[in-house]
Length: 194
Image (cartoon, one colour):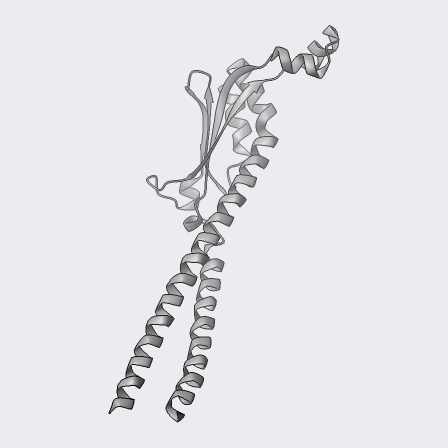
């Protein structure tokens, strides 16, 4: 009778250990996945901004909403970008492109937002004509704030890679359970033999 009580306690403790291990593994996997997705979205936003900055600077300099809107259209089918909004220096919306319908993202879902100011940098013809070197140009600070651009990036739950991540999570859980069953069977057999 005493031996059966120990076996039952051992089984209960082992089941609780497996559940705790599964919770911990899933928590760590989820945090790592979200952090990796954030960094990927940050790199994507930097790449998008690097390619658009000149066009946005031109459109904001002249207040040309049509040019701004046309420059955003190239991002229409980008699955990593949910919304991009261009503001002038008085926070008025100059242009916006919204992919949320295409990506099936509801309007109330929080996006990963990145904002970058758009500054009019000194033109090379000005610096050449004044024969100023870079240090003087930077110290004079000839930049003028034209506005800013905000990118609302796709959250992980609406990312195309979410299915693959869920497959990895399921595989991780199956491996943990299989290893724990093997450990339980081996430990249980040695415990019963004692």
